[in-house]
Amino acid sequence: MQSMNISLPDPLKQYVDGQISTGRYSSASEYVRELIRADEKRKAEEQLEAKLLEGLSSPETALSPSDWKAIRKEAMAKVEARKQTR
Image 1 (tube, one colour):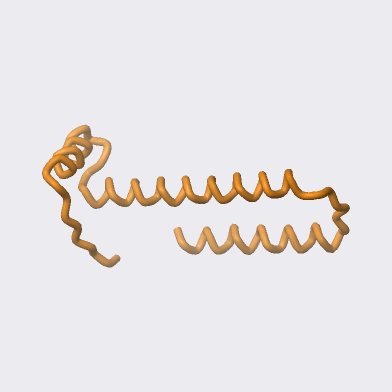
Image 2 (cartoon, rainbow, N blue to C red; image 1 turned 90 degrees about the horizontal axis):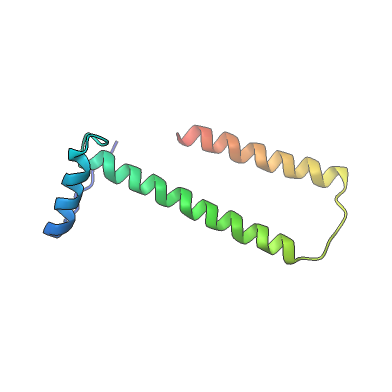
């Protein structure tokens, strides 16, 4: 694991310290990691919503069995890739 140093203004540092003092986080690093994970999740949800809206606004087309096979293959590859990054 690599380390990263960040500088925070006093009010933000106090806020982070307050979050740690609640006992939910054991360190500032843990708190920041949780914030980054939440940001990743939010962005993924935004991308999914955009793709769903794009799909809803596109014309209907029939999917062939080979289309479904390709969709499943791509989804499984993404699932496997996500498992390896955790």
